[in-house]
Length: 365
Image (cartoon, rainbow, N blue to C red; front, side):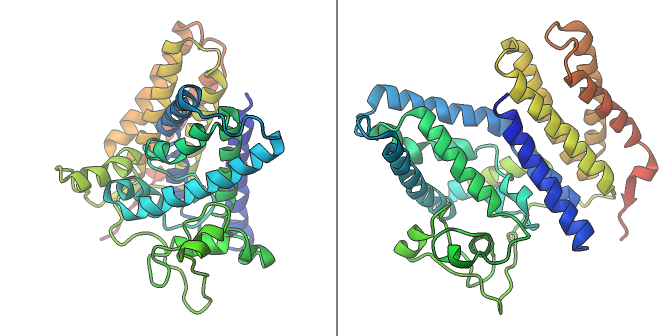
């Protein structure tokens, strides 16, 4: 339950920002990108995040040197905060420098709508490629619970730094990585390429010569020049790796019609609700049911991508998986009376409505 509330808070903040951008500032909000960002890796990434923590804990318990065991908890926490940020700087910088790591990280940079939801957009495999960079904390003896807490703080700061509402942050511009600094990091145009790799402190970029402030006279261009034209989370995470390996992969044809914005973001909310329920149920559901629920969330995210891409299989998958889950709510004890049944029922009704012609835009030309 403790992780349900933070996850729900992230979703609420994304929704508030989108409301301000769309209603107050009258700016376009590309719902397909917002929903892709929310669904990009949450189910599979959640699984691999658990693996990352498990590996850290194994190294800590077996090989930890206990160098910080006798330190005051506040000092221990402060050192962990600093070391974590230093490790993240090099993690981030090398994910831009090494081909296989960039094939994982590029998913985050392909987003062209700079907003809080972009802070959630990640490859399925980003937690896996992060594992080696933080093991130094385990080796010096930073407890696993401190590692988790410190990481949570840093990741929330990074989430905040993707917001589209804050332009400049006053004196913090000289100390912290701010939304302005991180906008520059996401630039694909000069002088913003390969700069501002820090997560929280701007210290590391200034120390290692990678700092670049955002310039008023040179607007930041977001995204990548070789962006994959798909909103399918499966291909977004796997196609860059297949390309790097030189393996064959599909070519994406333009969609003849696209799902309207309302149906995209409501599908995204339903999919995120599945994730929240998985987090809630993880501690007490039987392993089989947890795994089925995890697969349900992953399939839902992939189906949304298919629908957003205008693919028939996306609509079919979106319809079938919710019907199957409704069946599980009658057959499996763990599912009976659970709120996931209401989510599945709402999603199945949503699926039926997406079969109407009125739910789609025909692409001209």
